[in-house]
Length: 516
Image (cartoon, rainbow, N blue to C red; front, side, top):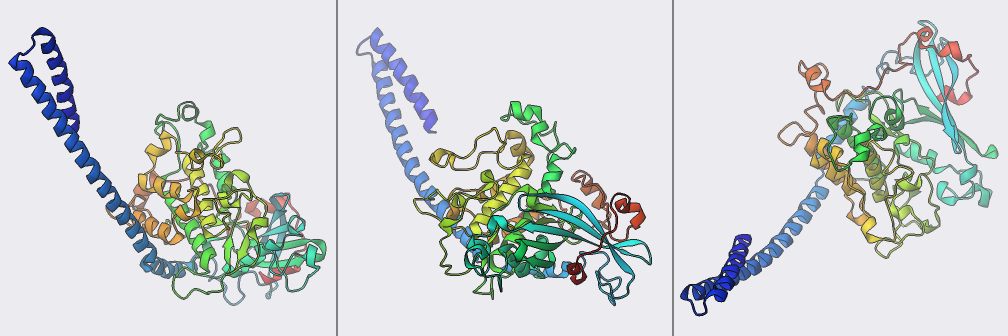
């Protein structure tokens, strides 16, 4: 309406000026001038009214949004239900757990099981990982597989934040002292929902050598970096048109991760975040002395894919948070100065509060569970963007000293068009510059459940709870599958068919494997 009146104003003005030039005192010209004044007055009046009303509506909307978020944060219903569901599923995640209860998986009491190793899986400056297979010699089938992470403790030797009882390099205290990585695994192990993290089965601490051996579950489908960099077509670096014209939608020309897969990964990462925050899924009755675990190295390299959950998104391997080598544990009223921590991990993945030189909202922020929220956002952004982290080596993203460059960049038009607005908004909210502006894990979990529950708001195409045995499953899943390949060392597979012994000779297993 305002635009129409403005046009009337403009047209009347033009006519009036034309008439004034042609004939002074013409009644028609006077009428046009009066009409012009009336239109201008009416437009100004409506404009002022709309500005006042819009301001009021905006304030009401902001209050309503805040109230809804607080209500979501205060609601335990979704999390309580999730804990019951997850607890029920934990018993079924390993297909051979119940086959030989008398001996227990990994037991050598019968003398019929032997360990074979090792296969080098990868490594870096903080250690290396090797695979061990256990074979039931009665059937010549694989009955267990364990990854041994040989951790190098030298880089953290003099940093107290990475130890439970002071840095050995400073205190010379070797007794009753664990690296935080081991402490984190022990704290999370066996809890409902802990299948969303890579489980530590046993460990051997060798402080005199500045070494530790962590015996971890094997994730047969690799990590998210392998999936992105494999020859599956998901890497945006291979999408020429997306690079040349990111403002145009090319989603129908290239492969992007299916949205249900992204929701599945998101859900598991958030469950892991809740556990790291308070040690349980339920909001009530949490241990008041629980030390918040801050992972500090979220990236797709550290997200692993294990055996699928047969009750929640059963078509996809379960995403798991792994590699707690840079994690810290923050107990309530922690007296340590976290400002002394170095910016470690991958710099472009680090949250603002992890940048030791940086003040957030003019305050030197401590790292917290909101730092993990940022990390989950970075991983999810990587999946949606088809990139390794928020940017490639030759691109820029954050400029912490410029307020206009502190928030995450928009996804390109292809990702914006391909993924639902609900998923994109949640991911972007995780990466807000101010930690207080990021959503809580409880809020994220409630939103994920809302948008993956079958119904009008479902953005996961009905795949969250749909059993593979359902007659419609094949048709529904066909357009949303991810090519993970096969489990080369599957439990129950004939050892001779695995190819393992053709490349690597059997080795004497470490004593710690007996405790697995």
